[in-house]
Image 1 (cartoon, one colour):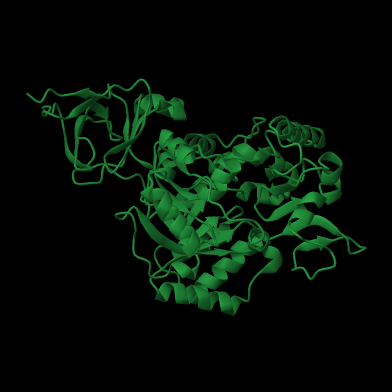
Image 2: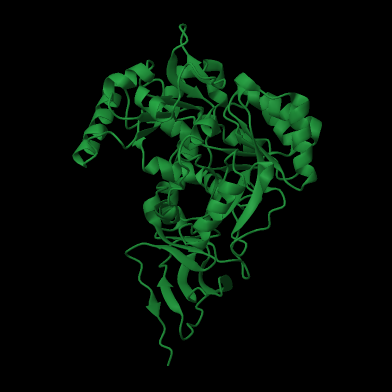
Length: 491
C-alpha cells in the first residue's frame, strides 16, 4: 500500500494553491490548509505546479532499452563518415581492451542516417571493423546494415534463398543491407529482453506515469515480457500495449496497470497492402472492440489510410501515428472521421535541419503540424517514438512551442502551440489521447507530477529539471534529491 502523503501549497493548473491528500493510491482531498494526519508524510510544494502525470503516447520500450546499450551512429552524435569511422573503431578497441580480443561481442549501432555515410554497406563496414560482427540500424527502424563477420555469424550467404529485402548488387553479391526484415533477422539471434529498469526510472524523472508501446509486431511473447517487467518492478508506469491480433481478448494484467490497446498497422509507401484487405482487417479489429492505429509518414500513406478508414468506418479510439505530412485536405478528412493524431513535434528540433535539405519545399509547411490540427478540432497528442526520438517530453513541448531546428531555423511558425496546448499533448488520458489536460479531482488515481516552479515560470522555461516528484497510483516512482518527506508524529 502506498505511503499516505500530504502535498502542501501546490499550485494547480487553474492557478489555485491547495493542499492535496493522497491515501490508498487516490486523491482523497483537495483544499486549503488540510490538517496533517498521524502517519502521513508531508511534502512542501512551496507553490510548485502540480500536474496530472504525463503520458508518452507513442514509444517502443524494449527497442529503446536495447538502444541504450548500443552505439549512436547518427545525428546529433555522429554527423559524417569520418565520425562514424571513429566511433566504430573506438568501440572495437574498447571491446579488445575489455578482454574480447577474439571478436566474440557484437557492435550494435543505432540511429544511423544516410546523410552520415551514403556509402554504408557491408564492404564499408568490413574496412572499418574486419574482425568483429557489426550491425547498424537506420533511425527509421526499417533497415539494418551488417558486415561480413555478422553475415557469417548468422549463416547468411548469397547462395541461399533469401527473402525480399535482402539487397544484392548487380552481380548478385549481398550488400549487407536488409530492409524491413526485423523478424527474419531476429529469428537468427538468441532472444533476450533488455531490462526496462533504468529506462523506466528515466521516464519517471520526466514526470511520466503512463506509456503506450506502439510496436506493430507486439504479440503474446512481447506481452508476457512486459507483464514480467511490471511484476518485477522494473516497469513503474502504467502501459497500454498496441500490437497484432494475437492480443485480442487479453484481460488487463498487473492489477490493471497493463492493458491492450489498438491494433497497430504499419504502412510503407513502397509496399502498401491491398486496400480491401486492409479495410477487412480494420473491420475485424473494430468487431473485436479494438481501435486501429495506423503508421503514416508520407502523403501517400496518409491518403491510403484515410481511404481505408472511410471504407471501414472509423470508431472512437482510431488513431493516425505521426501524420508527418498532412495538408489541409488531409486535416479536413481527419476531422470528419473523428480520428486522433499522435505526432512528434520534437522531430522539428532534432531533425529539422535535415528535413530542410531532404523534404520537398511544398511539404515543409505541412511537416509535423501542431496548430493546424487543433484549428480543425482534431484530437492531438504526442509521443517520443523512442528510440527514434528523445524520451524527454519537456523538450518536445518546447519544440511544439518554438518549432526551431538545432541551427535555430524556425519552421512553419504558424503551427506553433501555446504553452497550455503543448502541455496537453502529454497531459491527456491514456485511453483517450488528445482530449485535453486532465483536471485533478478527488477520487482520481494519484498519478501526479510535482514541479519546483509555478505555471508562470514554467512557461518561460519548459525543462525536465523542474520535476520534483512523480507518483503513480500514489506510489513515489521518482523523487528529486532536494525533496524532503516529513513524517507526521503518530503520537
